[in-house]
Image (tube, rainbow, N blue to C red):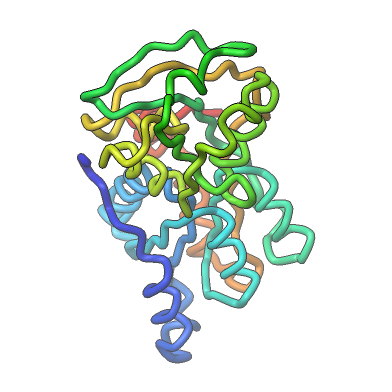
Amino acid sequence: MRGYIKCLCVGLVACALTGGAVQAQDPDRLLVFAASSLTEALTEVGEAYAKTGKAKPVFSFAASSAIARQVESGAPASLFVSADEEWMDYLAARNLIVADTRTSFLGNTLVLVTPVDRPLTLNIGPGFPLAAALGKGKLALADPMSVPAGKYSKVALENLGVWSAVETSVVRGDSVRNALAFVERGEAAAGMVYATDAALTKRVAVAGIFPASSHPPISYPLAVVASHDTPAARAFRDYLLGPKAKAVYRKFGFAVK
């Protein structure tokens, strides 16, 4: 996959938590926990930010659910960027983010993908024949119990009246990138991912686009983590919302708010 960067979450957090007080107290340290679907875009933004003479941000990408729980457990993140509002609400309810730094800044689209050598086209709408299209194959989703992409996907299928017909065919990934990988490898006949993820690889084909009305708006909020509310964290937050960063988001296909 072009530009694919493996998630650093578990190892990086362990290292940060045990790396000593000097690192944790560095006022210029920037450790950003972000949803995996933002990997390429935020990495590019971080590299551009470092070229301005600022400290280079270190990113940990994983499912929003995983990184939110790590923030709750005391991981020394400077900023948290979620793929839905619910996990930001989760941290806000526990007073773990700085409320006045919370901003919803990006949107996305949900698509159905298939392996590129098994393309199909479906007109996605109420009662569309997803089960028939899958046949005996699997449908890859991010875990709908916790991962934003999976939650959006399940709600969309329920609202379109097809969830009960495909539920037993679902294979669950621990992130949207994991769900995409199932389809790339041909282990699933189809998958539901963000349009920005599908655009990163030539190993899947888009079979259809889910109507925005079939699921809650896909919204990416960011906020400074309360335990690391530093000038450096706020400066990078502002850069993430600035015009140069927005140009990068648009390049990768995100809707900029």
